[in-house]
Length: 227
Ligand code: ADP
Ligand code: MG
Image (tube, rainbow, N blue to C red; front, side, top):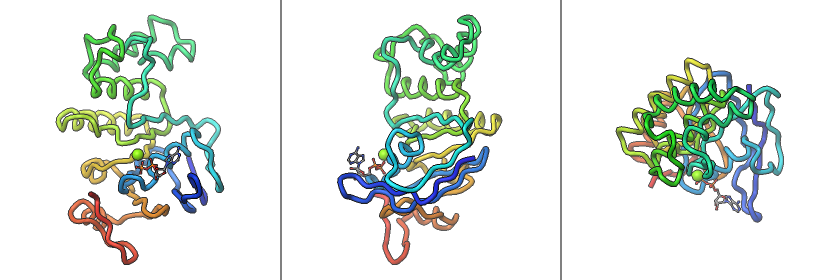
């Protein structure tokens, strides 16, 4: 459903991505690992067409819709929680009563019931992140792009949300590209895992994933450490 061919990207002469290839099937979940500054967020921004590509191409079906959940949630500050979640439906012309009913259902799923009339500034970071996740589902994407979506949440909440997100994605056959530092997401939910290092995206075996999380990983003679 999506194919990246020989994608390269430089910032101010510095190579961030070099000939990156990736193909994503419908409903497939992949995780991308790599240390800070390795270009993970840049890769998602190129896929979401928020940054121009220097060379290479991204092929996707014209109907393929991507929802991008950024590391820091971007909510509409002048809209309430409910209005934020219902916004994609408003754009599609869904009647108010119906779109609020759908939004309320999502509000419950992300455990924000009772907070529908609050504004984003009245929410904690974790609550804002949940609003942005609910809104992304309401958008009904074919592909979820997620940039460390649970990084700011406590362990219990992030487990709950992981469970919710991956189950919903499976039910709806939504594909996902997840940038993460989380072992469980990689181990339990990913069909394939990649490492981004020195501009190159390489596929990782299950054993390499284990090594990566345990003690760093040796790739082409270099030892890669997480921290
Ligand atoms: P990661 O998400 O893996 O931490 P990023 O994709 O954010 O890494 O950044 C990769 C590299 O590109 C970093 O060196 C960063 O400083 C640089 N970079 C990212 N965005 C920009 C930008 N808009 N302008 C200049 N340099 C950038
Ligand atoms: Mg990043």
